[in-house]
Length: 272
Image (cartoon, helix red, strand yellow):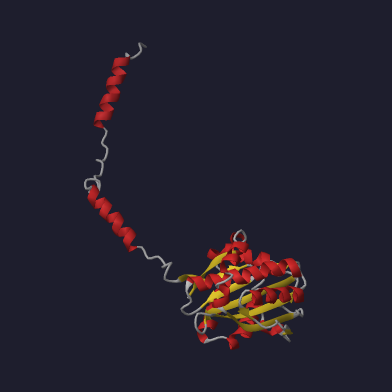
């Protein structure tokens, strides 16, 4: 049988293709009107419902400052906030060097530094909280201990600040706090809330807390007591910063802690 010439095969395929019916390409009206496409996309983005950020997270209201979780209430200007943070950080760093793991020595040095730079401060007298396990966890114990000493506004801010430490946005601040507040099996930390005082002075309500427990590392504020007895001690007082005195040493304090701030301080975003 003689083979079919190539030209005949080509003609057969051409005829098949010509006769084969295929659906026409659908023309999208949007393809014909680029401006309509752009408008539709913009309208879609505008219609999306997302949670607000700045309206629900308050910045500059609180900060981790070494082992101190510091909040602010009322009309306290940024300069006074810095005075509180700088002076208490200087006192902490000096106490770390002088007192180490000895709580009594640590607070003795902490008080000494504060007194010498303008704070009116009493000795920190720690008392043990009996049956602290009944609170369930550290955060609840701290709030219950501090609340009677605070105004309603200050109490709400302190509570919101503590629970803000659980949020992912504050992970870096929490890491700094954990590193400074936990040592081995002992937690030593402070919670403070500052407000304006008479004249140009600043009032600071501060609580010092100390407890020993296994497994609290990484969860100092939210450690659950469980059934094991935990020795939990605390000391609370109200200090006042005399700004007239502090004005004379402010620059020297800032210079002394200048290189330490980045490692020890981080703003905390608080949700209300």
